[in-house]
Length: 286
Image 1: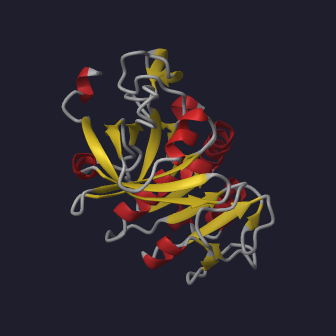
Image 2: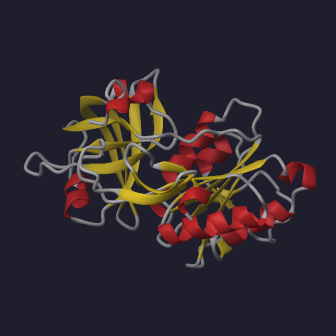
């Protein structure tokens, strides 16, 4: 295990409290893991066992965590043998949770723009919940090319600059009084018919210069989407942090199987996504 994280990562036998299937082979799983729940921060992930007969764990982003009640939520998509084995696990069963792992997002601006694509949505939801009782004014943009793992509802928050008819929002965020909008190319009702970056641009253009100066961009999703988000941030001269998704073996810094090239003051360097990330300054990666 990476020395810097040796005293922060826990291993727990976690009970599955609920495991809900959604369209597009998506699942939301809640486990009782009080140690992970107590320490988890937005942008971190956990390494989960998927089946007693399959020793290789799978890294899954943390979507929510309750330190008071000791549970952690994960949203994931079954895309291979490992995650399909995980999808077969039932309420009351146990899995091993190794976490929380990695560098978290650092929210520094008053108006965070949170952009999540596909299974990159969970860290944005976690950030939003962490800001629920703050004086921040976040805006959340979520994109998916499969049905969203929730039933969208019309937003109660009108936002200047957004196209007419773009009203679909995530109910949980609405309940938290945090404005959100959804984007997809699949023609879902109320969603922006385009990319998350298009929708983010509409929102940015609807702000005053003073308001735009308070924006910071935070994103997680497919690599191509993150590159487009960084280009958008560069265009508006905004700070940007991204959470990278990479295949991992150990997930604790030992195997160096998840390295990416990152720009540093001393030149290009190879960094491990698991413990040097997964959150990086977007400009150093793209």
